Every structure is written in structure tokens, then in C-alpha cells.
Length: 69
Image (cartoon, rainbow, N blue to C red; front, side):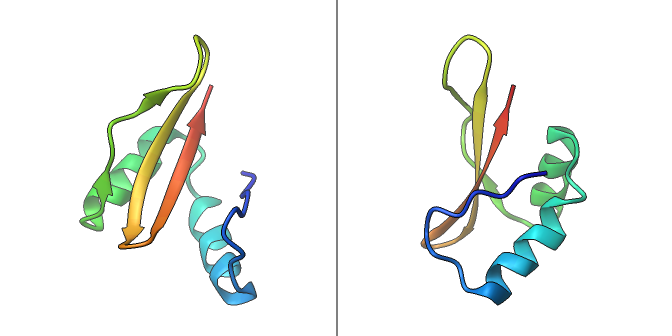
């Protein structure tokens, strides 16, 4: 799984997120993790006819967005 950093994460933040998302090989796994952790999953957004973005709120100012095609 590829992690694109658009907010200049620290090395520690990036390592933590990479370790987390490497287990999310399916969007279903990511959703189960987020719901189990009590995180808010925003309404998926259609980017085009083939892909969705699924934002998960990590904190007040941080979101993890899954791209699903």
C-alpha cells in the first residue's frame, strides 16, 4: 500500500501510519479498523466513474484518505 504525504509528516508519524495502513489491503479492513477505533468515516466521494476517496478523520486536523478503484 502506498502512502502519499500531503502535509509534511514527521518521520515518526509517517512510520506509524505506514505500519497501520499496510494491513489495510481491502477497504473493508480499513473501515472495520476505523469503526473499531471510534474514528469518523466521511461519506465516500466519487472522483470519477472508476474511483472513490474515503476520508477517515484521525484528529481535528488530520485525515487519512483511502483511494479505491
